Image (cartoon, rainbow, N blue to C red; front, side, top):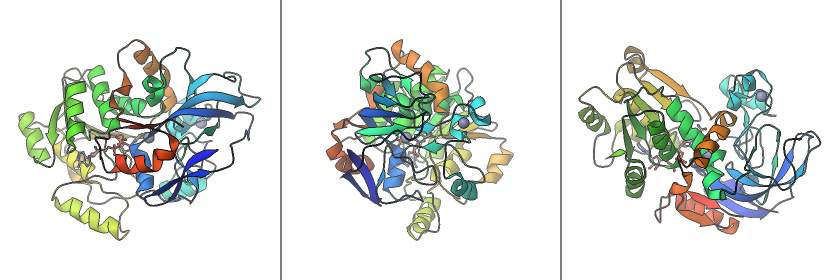
Length: 390
Ligand SMILES: NC(=O)c1ccc[n+]([C@@H]2O[C@H](COP(=O)([O-])OP(=O)(O)OC[C@H]3O[C@@H](n4cnc5c(N)ncnc54)[C@H](O)[C@@H]3O)[C@@H](O)[C@H]2O)c1
Ligand SMILES: [Zn+2]
Ligand SMILES: [Zn+2]
């Protein structure tokens, strides 16, 4: 089959690779019909994530049609249409039983590498480095899905792929990010980033009772989309000091909830910490450019909550823990506990409460995926979200 393979920083190619096969009775094989490119893929593309190997197949936002199931998969059959979550979870360990699916104890065969780096291993993820399992991803013609009796969500209606595809990652991710804010009715929620995850977090913040949503980015069409599609107020961080603007907009109190939907590759115009991050990451002295988490701690109101869906990799420095502690802040984070959210959020799509396809700007065949990675990374051509249709 054809698959999009990682070959090094800034180098992904469409290669011919062996078709996936059932390796375990709980596996299924899916023929992919649509697959997103995610901001998380950019961290791999940009060389931020350790333990990638040449030839690794990328992609963790897939959906498609079941072509084969293992003997223990009784909930799916050949021909079923499914959305596959990016987290791989066994469904019956201590963590899965607590619905902390992205913390599954049984799905990462390379757990020991992750344990050494992080103390404990999170769940295995599709297309996301060897430390997180070395699983082939879904930017390909076919995908092997482990624990297929737990992960894939069957789509019984005739909703088109584009309306349900983002149940594979970013809609649940934006929703969990907003839920992690513990929004009280009327709260002001500030969202750093206007990328796909942020756009979903903005919509979700309204659903969960926000009174005001303020979105921060510098890419004009992304800011405009947040305004147009979700009635967010916006701040362009190239033009305004984010701290000053947010305090002004909240009469000096600061936003009640702050969502970091940017993660480890933050940009910042002229700020000292961002210049230091850039210099240090260029010579491999740091793994993350953590400007947004620092800024969110500074901006958040006393006693407020910071929610971090943005992905971090290693041990960034200069995090203002003094402010965090003395202001009495709460921080919540995590890879999304996908299986907890997929069904209820499908119901919201079916009920017409949201159509997540509003962020799609580019649709490409698999052969054009390498060029699409560059367009998405460089935010060229108005690119906000790419869907690959193999
Ligand atoms: N927790 C999870 O389970 C999960 C799932 C999916 C994605 N993610 C992570 O969420 C993050 C966002 O993903 P995405 O697909 O929206 O990515 P994206 O790269 O398209 O969007 C990031 C946005 O942040 C903006 N930005 C950069 N610096 C900024 C700053 N200083 N202030 C405000 N905005 C800034 C960029 O201009 C861009 O629009 C990534 O880190 C990704 O890895 C996490
Ligand atoms: Zn993702
Ligand atoms: Zn588990």
